[in-house]
Length: 400
Ligand SMILES: Cc1cc2nc3c(=O)[nH]c(=O)nc-3n(C[C@H](O)[C@H](O)[C@H](O)COP(=O)(O)OP(=O)(O)OC[C@H]3O[C@@H](n4cnc5c(N)ncnc54)[C@H](O)[C@@H]3O)c2cc1C
Image (cartoon, rainbow, N blue to C red; front, side):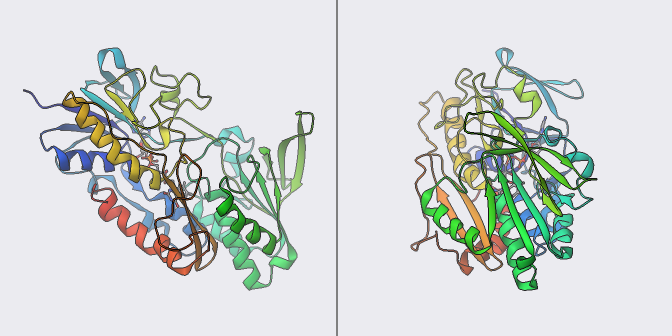
């Protein structure tokens, strides 16, 4: 019997983890990873870069050094899927066939959906930790700030790491408090959400931080424009009759997070979930198998599984996809199930971190034998030291 051909679209956190895990279980698989990027990013540390305690260069490594041995890397972007023919087509126009397709090209940052944002990023006191290019500028802004209006934004679309828009805000406030600047500052959090965090046990901790830092949340509001020349953020907020009202706020510094959606080539493909406004790959939320094409699986930020989009979620999704792909290839029932686990490590101050863990039931699922809703130094060490090491040495290698 000829070797089974697995095509993996995206060699990021999810793609490399699942490729490594598959090979550990079955060396005979012929795995091809499609990814045009020469670099691999450890994105969770960009918050720490923005907070001035992590070198951005330590978050960027050569993709070639992490492609699992025994797989083939095609340095080309996938542009089209023809699932009825088990075929995909790349940007360079080459077609490939597969027995199993695993889709994980991450999420798309829709910067252009906020008018004026892209043009001003990285200058005029507007930044975003959502790009390695600008995260160092976030720190410049925080460090050089002398007081005034500090605006942090969070879109209403699902995003990768739902905590990242406010993590940087708490660290900035802590820094300004120590510099004696917080008293001269109005901190605003403009968020598309209706609460600070979806799980009450963890939200309680953050509400206290918000009160201590004197942060003014503006909920159910979407930023639509940033006018850098006039230092204004415009946002739309629904009034009591449900109509969107346009409002504005002056800023001296602004940390902006763009709306996000599935990459366009996924959205326009037959594999996208037609019911999902963000166009993710349509999978069963537990088995991560496509609901219409049984030889297609998806995990990570581009899948429709309604979990919080994080690397932590991928750690639990990758073993499920591995097991179910192998079961599919061996004509066995698909039984492995993902229960929606995700985690959000939220620093509340330099040296203090709340590790929020939860699943589809939206209740805390704590790993450690203590109350993780309480910010701790040990959890800060986990985020700043242990997890980056684990990522490069174990997670991408499929052994954690
Ligand atoms: C500021 C920030 C803070 C975060 N903090 C945390 C945190 O504390 N904890 C946590 O767990 N997670 C965190 N995350 C989220 C985490 O980084 C992502 O959830 C994770 O990287 C998603 O993995 P992925 O493989 O789905 O996508 P990615 O890791 O983004 O990889 C996608 C890959 O697909 C490739 N690709 C794109 N298009 C194509 C195409 N057409 N064809 C082929 N390949 C393609 C890309 O080049 C890339 O290599 C954070 C993210 C950010 C931005």
